[in-house]
Amino acid sequence: MNSVSVNVKRLAAMALLTAAIFVLQFITVPLGAITVTLSMVPVAVAAITMGSVYGLSCGAIWGLASIIKALLGSSGMTSVLFTMNPALTLILCFIPRMADGYLLGYVYKLFRRFTSVLVAGCLTGFFSALFNTIFFMSALVLLFGNTDYVVEMMAGKTVIIFILSIIAGNAIFEMIVASVVTGPIAQALYSAKLIPGK
Image (cartoon, rainbow, N blue to C red; front, side):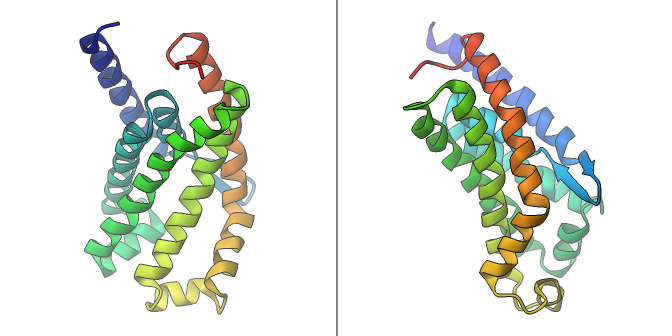
């Protein structure tokens, strides 16, 4: 397959993944009192199929979708933070998601060395949600930790306990759902010869 054909396929894939990110950013899955987002799944798929650089790029697109949602007033916390400090909110939305996408390429390669595509895909999906929670919440405390809004949210917890409490809430469900969804997608793409072997 020549380089032009590969580039066209990657461009088409990025267009589809971009659309998926924007759609999923505005859709949440209710699980009782908990809501789960699947925005990290297209980022994980990009990292699995095309590598870390494309994962980073999709992470940046996810950050852009987050900012647009905040500007529309549809994202409670991010919308509030944007009114407080737009520049820091841009950093908060972009850097954690870009780091997430970049690392996922290596996560998939690592697990693919000693396990199947399905399992490696599931684990990559799991880590996509885990990394997002750790990076985003850590950046939130770093950038906005001195604001009344975040101080009230933390309710006297240490940073580690605060992040663990988030993981124990929404994030654990996001990890499970992202894992269950990403693994079969990776397997289907591998079967279609869109993901290389080991």
